[in-house]
Length: 271
Image (cartoon, rainbow, N blue to C red):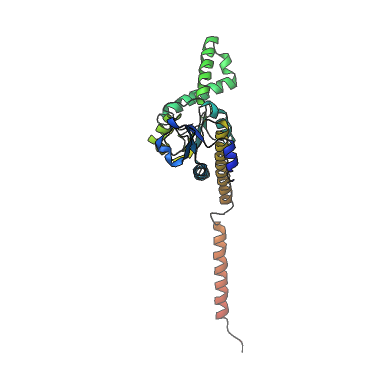
């Protein structure tokens, strides 16, 4: 894992929080001080928390976990798409679907319907339908694309959530907590970090700050994926079962050797 540079963190504005009047007292652990009415985040704590979260994600990816990246605020949408797609993980960048975790079976049914529409469009079957019916399906597909972008191929609940802005994604956090799904989240001074399993205190309004943190987490996930691939390759090279014919050959050789020894002992000695 690469070392975090304080200079880059300061340049990206990671340390800038919200106005002092908006700060959450539960954030005190990660606060450096209040300066000119602005809450300043302790970058040492940010760095330590970020490294802890990254190590956790590496271990999860190594075990084959599905990590869902969630960032629906405007500043986060583009980088969330880029980071999740780079490591081939699901993401939610447009809006959080209520019940996406707690009511996943219903969401799964809608996903299957959307995939069926996509196949109809690819095969040209959609163009063969009556004009009015085809138009209705296409309008529904536009709505579904906005809702299901990034989770279209999700077959089961994600194992971990990575959240951008704990306050903005409060519904997703509540659903994850209810199902005991661990959450890694970027937490600003106006949020409650105790709701997150792996909080990362940082400015969640700056696009530069979000990119710096999410790209660091992306590298952590990518490292875990590579370790998983290497682990699979190493297991393939190790023979698990010894061929049975080898064992039988060994038994035959042993039997022949013992019979020869016995015959030699029984032969009369010449004087």
